[in-house]
Amino acid sequence: MVTNAMLTATLLGSAQDGGVPQAGCHCTHCAAAVADRRFERTPVSLALQSPSGIQLFEATRSLSRQLALAGAQTPTAIWLTHAHLGHIDGLGQFGTEVMNTQKIPLHCSPAVADILRTTPAWRALLDQGNLLLQEFCSDEPVECGGFTVTPLEVPHRDDLSDMHALLVDAERKLLFLPDHDSWDATLAAVDATDPRDWFRQLEIDIVLLDGTFWSSNELPRQVEVPHPPVRETMELIGTRREGDSRIVFVHLNHTNPLCNPDSAESLELASMGWELGQEGMAFQLEP
Image 1 (spheres, rainbow, N blue to C red):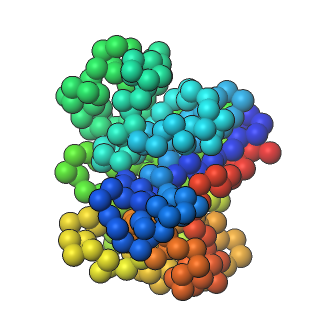
Image 2 (cartoon, rainbow, N blue to C red):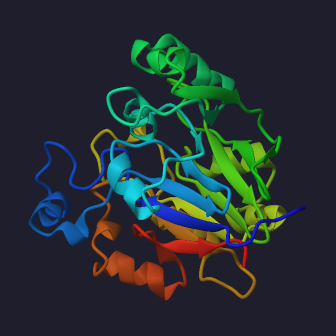
């Protein structure tokens, strides 16, 4: 595969859709973020930066702050994993009221494209020519000027759309998997025995992984928002071994004790060799 020099993935946001602090919340983590901006987290997003431009994964409400982390450039393309609000509610900023972009390719599944076409606010961006839909197919690589991005469908609440993890294939491989329902469902869908087995099958170097909840009892209605708890993931993968993928947990809900980098849970995670996503983390995918 032809490669461009200096392909870098930069983590622009590490929180669940609502960010930290979350609107209307006065929990310990949200109060800490109000008092000290160092504890703020914006909704999960990633920038792939290369000489040919920026590929933006997710379009969040914190777009201005996140693009500043990526050098304040206008993205050359946008990718959406699914249609839940926190992953798409920044799209309006590409319209005439703000950036007024011209035909930026917007890569998404046909199901997400249907949502965009039938929602008036998003439809206007298409009609005005701000965004240009590019529907992808699961498991089919998309050439991005020296590297590819391959959508991989994984089970996640299908109340609005399907969900695709995004596999970046360059000299080093990165898997962007901010949301999925459960390991049982995902592993069955990809025909793998455990997360480590799946990551090895894909030859992944870096995984940005769903870390929404630490445990299964953080919310009274948690069964309605299924995500595999970090504690369960750690039980499945154990301590990091030589040759393992680098796993970085992202998409943290404001209830997650990992929001506090000094919590016992954060220290336990680090002691096992795994990492906690922070805004501005950079991952070199090409030298």
